[in-house]
Image 1 (cartoon, rainbow over the protein chains, first blue to last red):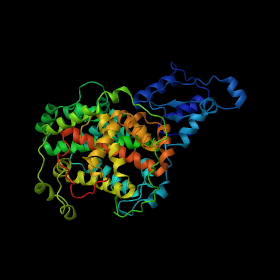
Image 2 (cartoon, helix red, strand yellow; image 1 turned 180 degrees about the vertical axis):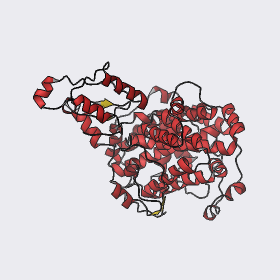
Image 3 (cartoon, helix red, strand yellow; image 1 turned 120 degrees about the vertical axis):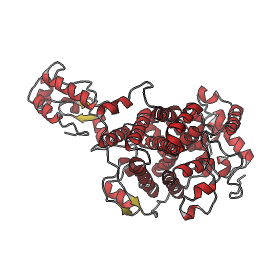
Image 4 (cartoon, rainbow over the protein chains, first blue to last red; image 1 turned 90 degrees about the horizontal axis):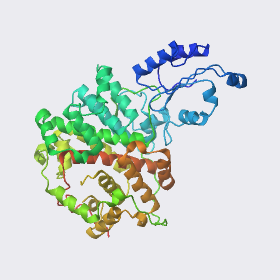
Length: 397
Length: 104
């Protein structure tokens, strides 16, 4: 009987049902299941009452129970349903935890750079997907995730709340479950966690801003940022923004890899540190075949901004006042390692991140540097993708 | 500016961004088109990405290069959240000037 989520009460209930107990919604067993569903925030769309005499005669199977949570994950199953119309779906869910091939834990540890600190515990599924193509990059992201989850300058509760709000806004069940687990580990009551997921504007300003930054960053106002600078200060605010930025990166990575959950529940943060040398795999050249397809036109929303409108908006953006003071290079370089002090940074984006939160910013820089080294993507293609993303988000960066 | 960093001169940047902005991507290779469509869909609603969308990238790029494309697209969302939060504009001047050789 496959089990993909720990629901300790279920086996007893299943034994009861298999023994012929009444599991209808109004029965004691049905009530117990529904109460359990409420406690664990899962949805029980259907409870089979096991009155399946034809199925029993044909297949000789015992009674059954199929419980599905809000994300359509089978928690436990048996009997007719498994052998009936959902067989293919269930087999797919059980055998394909991701859209792309995953390494085994052992293979992934062999592929990643040498571990210099920490123990070879279970790696997250997303790392099993990326480790082969991007071993050094995967290692850098694992290190940065730890910084955000365990070493962030933000208070443990606040960083857990921010991560949860961002994951929920992105509808990323994987990181939402992880953030909830982090919050519970830090002592947050379930009722407080649930409140963070409610609709409406009842969230504190910093969490409202985190959600807005995730869903429609271009709608964040000068006044909202000014209020946060006043209440938590520039340094903390940059840490908040970098956490939201990381969340939006990670949620998209996880969702695009098709990973919905860890088989044994969310993994705790792990303090892994890796050697900087990695064994990047050989890649085929970027395909450069000329277009042969018919002309294509994007949707009306895309065409609602003409090329000249976009250029004008970019010029307007360049004239806008910044919402935060940009540290000078002299201020920034004292917090950088010696090798990074040699070349002056002039990019405002980098000066802000490095100036206010050097550890988090250097963690992110390590990710992007490793990626550039390993993927060696075509730069024009890279920046064209970036252009498409910024245009979609109406970010005139 | 970032396309300039990538090595394009002003004319080439204008031509490429015009083509991207006008939405007729037929001049790009099939792989590029698939990647741009993926980037747009992922930016609008990351949860809407399905196995078919990823399979389409794999068809053009293979598994490892598909992971590169997914990773890079996801990375763009880190950059934009920071830029939008603080209204950080791209620099007027190319701060990489002199370190790159423009392509034609």
